[in-house]
Length: 37
Image (cartoon, rainbow, N blue to C red; front, side):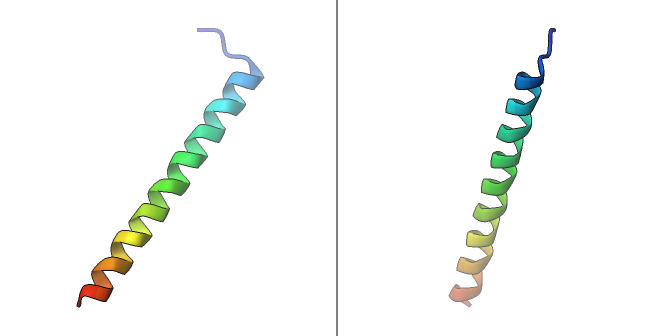
């Protein structure tokens, strides 16, 4: 598969966005669990 610099940059950007959203969701879940107790 041919990988251009723009393709690699795009994949890295998407991966960073997914990781950020995953961390944000995990933070919300942990915070909601703390408030219940």
